[in-house]
Amino acid sequence: MSNIDLENERLSLRPVADRLLVLLKTRGPQTAADLGQALGTTGENARQQLMKLAGDGLVETEAVARGVGRPSQFWRLTDRGHARFPDTHAELTVSLLRNLRDVLGKDALDRVISAREDETRAAYSAALAKIDGLEARIAALVAIRSREGYMAEWRPAEDGDGWFLIENHCPICAAATACQDFCRAELSIFQEMLGPKCSIERTEHIVKGARRCAYRIRAR
Image 1 (spheres, rainbow, N blue to C red):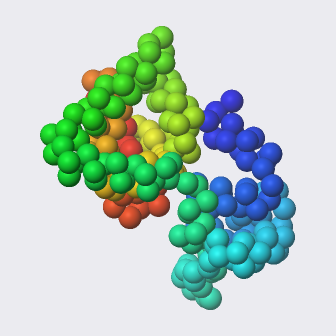
Image 2: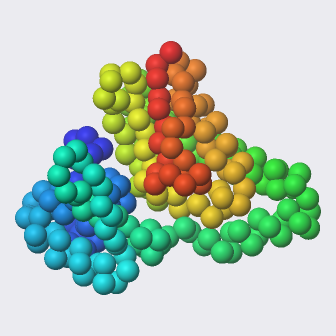
């Protein structure tokens, strides 16, 4: 069963409102018709649920032109909706990072980040030690990241040139925003875990305002 099939199976077990929020988080803005199809119901049923979520301030609509005719109404998460997917201990983490830098200096903060990087590298290396093949290692890395709260998935690139590793949520977003060396360390670890026979490029970045983080992986 593929990564996407597993996610769809997990999604089907959630209450309808939660399923809609997850779909908007992982797929971006969608029409009510698209969401209804994904849920196996009608667009009108999806719209009724979306209206309830809008009443709670979790979703909103935007008009998007799609060729000739009236603009289509797309539903998307509000900031409050995104907050339903929490940044783990965000305020405490940012405060600790700030105090560490102010009291002990940037070198001390760099050492802490390096220690975390070493710990993550060791854990990932152990998990991937017996997995051969680039695509299999991508799938295994995605599984690890999903367990850590990144809502990760992977898929072959539509143009046939490599793969995309996508993280729809960042559970350490506040920390990464306060200190972007966390993101630098993650990209370095991804490259090391997947090996020298591929290249990795970050194409979307939550910290820079994107909806998700996305990485393009190409075999060398």
